[in-house]
Length: 136
Figure 1 (cartoon, one colour):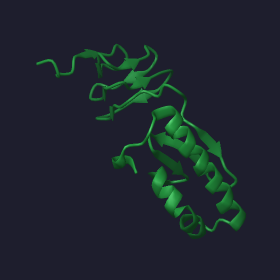
Figure 2 (cartoon, one colour):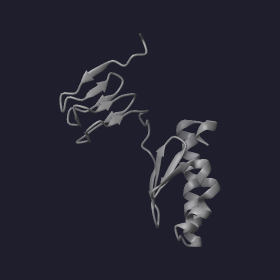
Figure 3 (cartoon, one colour):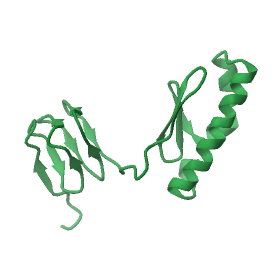
């Protein structure tokens, strides 16, 4: 069957790595762990237990901004994580003021984060193209 994953055993830890994935020799993939898809694992990264690392590789580094209160991360296509909250960009654009107030942001901080969200929205389209309806 052509859609079956072809696996190899990683020398450092004995975990399974799909032929489509890339894992550095220096990285550890434990015996029960798997790395698949277009995932990339580099450096001294360690994948333990029954963890599964999968997904698309970033062609460009994800955007990260340290705001005045919490950090913002372009955590996946169409999504932003601010502090511990991860939502679609569309959800952030709709709800950032209410979330900011609930997190005790000042009015100036709410506006600051609104500008960051706008930047993430522009960059998301530039990096990934138009966002599908399912990511909105």
